[in-house]
Image 1 (cartoon, one colour):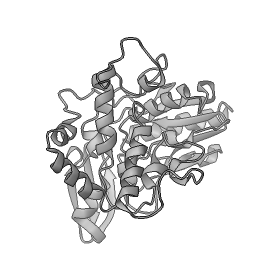
Image 2 (tube, helix red, strand yellow):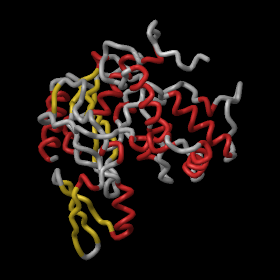
Image 3 (cartoon, one colour):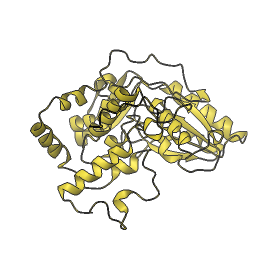
Image 4 (tube, helix red, strand yellow):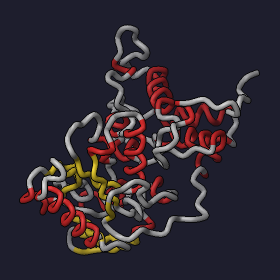
Length: 315
């Protein structure tokens, strides 16, 4: 991890010094353990703030939308796929980007660690394979692969698909991973079981829209939940309004989601928001052989038409 960090700083310093970019978007240490935050570096003397470890789970593509500057951005595999979608959907120009690709071996699930150590947690250090947990009075070690975010544990695209230079050597991609195991489990339920499952899943929702705000795909000028003429969904905590928000937001991401996990990571009440988008990712792959953000040369399946598109939905 320190090798990645040193390389990111080296590239950022060079690009800012020679004027190749106006800013570098990366990460710096947050004020709490495991809470690295996005930062915008515009001066060479500020490059020392940049960090990289397994707490850089926020998708930085979220900060590129409609920007006109020359930007260098740090991008792991899922970030780079969202950047591809940004370019395809004309939200950023490729020539305005310098992509510093970071081969990724997964981000840790901070909730799992906090739930175990709680208020005793002082610091978390990452040596690449293990986490050194510093708590009041002692230190403990955890194997990083045991506490990865669920999307990272099932990720098969850890290497950036689009980059100008790399912060390190490409890593082996995971093989034999069942990315849709949880989707298959829900699909196998009876209608009554599915209804109860999603009722329980969404019951904690407080309508804070953190999932929407963290998602790099949610860049409509006015979100449907904020429309008043016409009003598509109410503002209340009524279960129908809550369901409508989550289902419609998921469908807006259909064929575009890279399973970066930003929505789940941002949720303050721990809702497994990926349950919706993972199902649509599975459908897009099975029906169209499509995975979002893998190429600049092909448009998403819901953005185009082919004569051989499946039409089993027509009765």
